[in-house]
Length: 153
Image 1 (tube, rainbow, N blue to C red):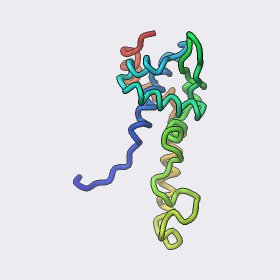
Image 2: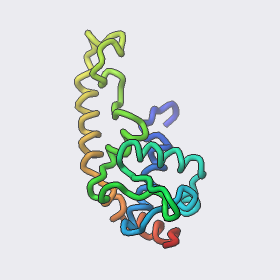
Image 3: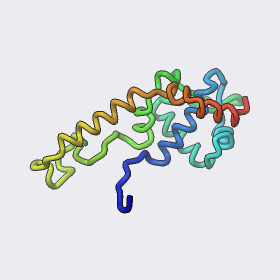
Image 4: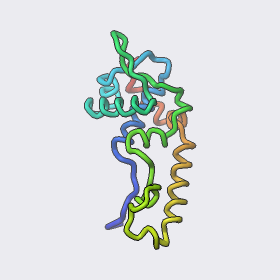
């Protein structure tokens, strides 16, 4: 549809899910280096490094120094929600500025007839993303097969 607006995840968020899904397929592994994850997921190394740092700050992955160092999941895949990943990379989930609790983000907020509708839509999206875990993502047969094919354990 020409001129259509698309609500979509940031590309970095999508890549973060790819990296985390790859790590979650083999959760018992000691650690992954950024270079390994880059090679195995076919994502650029600087992008993977940046994402791992953001995910570590959010407590989703843990950095481990030393000869056997690298990154590993900080929690079980079933304990990491897609909403947490989105927020780690993109910040708070909101489909419109008026969803933010900070007043004054919109010129017409006091008289806005649609604010409550956007809040309901936003709440539904957040609820779905909170209900979807990394384990759910990895249980998809295509995700699992492609992740295992690219993996060097």
